[in-house]
Length: 242
Image (cartoon, rainbow, N blue to C red):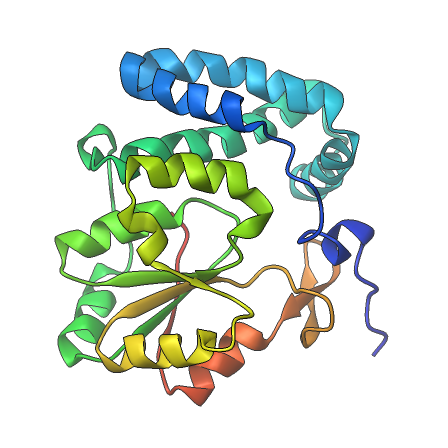
């Protein structure tokens, strides 16, 4: 089987410069907390419009994705709504980190199976994608006394991470940075204590092992690292999208 070549966007995502500006991010966080969720959401329309106009690479990727999903060429409105969805997820993280879960209507699918795993005392690996927010998972974990840590690269969005950490400094303590000498040991110890580790499994980094999988009408490379890690540590894997 011929392996699909990773797209340039997939190859360099960790090195790609962050498009956000620290003062703007801090102002948006302040505005969100000062005005509340409904009023501050209006600003997201301006932010989404900026990215639609001034982020051509993101625009091309969005159009390709939407064409596959919708079965037709995406309109400008489709692309705008797509970017607005991403902006909304980041915006909502402000309130999740602030402990304002009361602002959201939450329904859990597969709660019974998750309760069984939690009752067993085993560590859990939550496998997600860039679809929804792990902050929702972490907030719900607190309700059920489940300690959730995130295995991730925080440095490719430093401005956003710093602004959100200012809201809830505990956020940084719950991140296990990928690529560090002790990363796997920290994951192992946390799972051994009955905790949960969340990891995104929809893009590989550099020479990470990956496997072609039929996805949206074509073969796409998905990293095998998250599943190999879970198998090595004998932890059950639960897919999540929040």
